[in-house]
Length: 388
Ligand code: APR
Image 1 (cartoon, protein in one colour):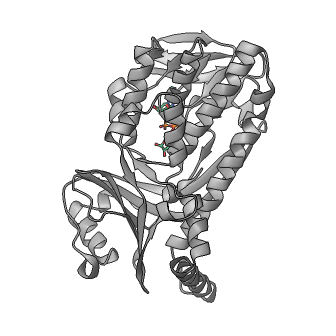
Image 2: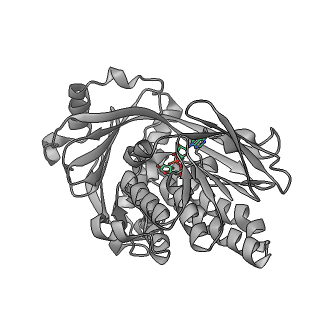
Image 3: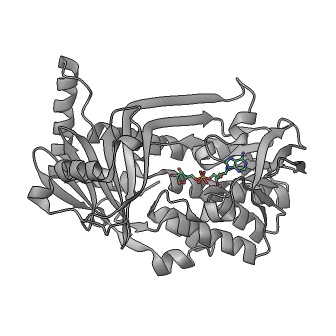
């Protein structure tokens, strides 16, 4: 088995295969240091914690993760909080930075004798439509090599070799740019509130998400195509202060901005998630906007589903689960896409000032008001917000 990519998807899959005695190698383009320090997602859903726990991969999460269950909305009309551990299915998030999860998973994989090559870039997956696929690989000095396998798992993200290797027309691509961009920053500053903050302001959306006691992620809606360099630290803090209505609800805790990037809110789903002997997992399978923090959770869930199916196929000669892999994961993916799409429409004004934009904006305000006042709506929100 060859696994491409050592993100959450590839490392969960690698650990589970290794534990079941299935020989595998992980090929990772970046260095070990790079994958262990890349700050990305941080909100793990209850189900993700359960997947990690039942596979014995949750020691770090249990000792250093922090439970989280409140989000706060600040709008032009009101401020309100939802404690989703008391709503819906009563579940919580665990805040645990992705780089720590990746570091844990990698250490466990190596301790169990797992094989991984860093700075090994997959160039292409060849002969995936047959039963002897192979991966063309290039090392950091450009030297080529070849890895043969029974199956290849593409856990190498949206721009990886797995997606690229599927011939045009063999799978359907559903792509949507939601027309909204966020400047995402990481501040070396303690969280400013004990909740995820969603601020809806005439100047645009602003978001606050705790990462660790010393670091916080903030988001600012910005014009599509904006350069992150147009946002020096002072401008970021000034804008966050206005949009989060710090004058009314409490000052923000400032600190240096150590990371900034502009992301377009996009959806991108391939269907099916399989091409012959090649399977797509995590970001390689589907991309989801960060509006509802679902990406890493889907990646872990899909990796477990694929690992179990591969074990059935390779150790019991039972291909049934493998044949169901794509349909099973797509059902979760589309539920998550639907909720993220709902969140995008909840958190952003329609652009422009024409009749349609004003109409849409009144619907958005009514939607927020319903969420503020209706227990039924809150239960639905909680179930989808923390679930996968
Ligand atoms: N060959 C080998 N490795 C590659 C290649 C390649 N051609 N291209 C990319 N990679 C590696 C990247 O360096 C990265 O380490 O694949 C890995 C993919 O990891 P992630 O991008 O973290 O993707 P995934 O494991 O699917 O996790 C997805 O986690 O960060 C969250 O929200 C984020 O949705 C995302 C989720």
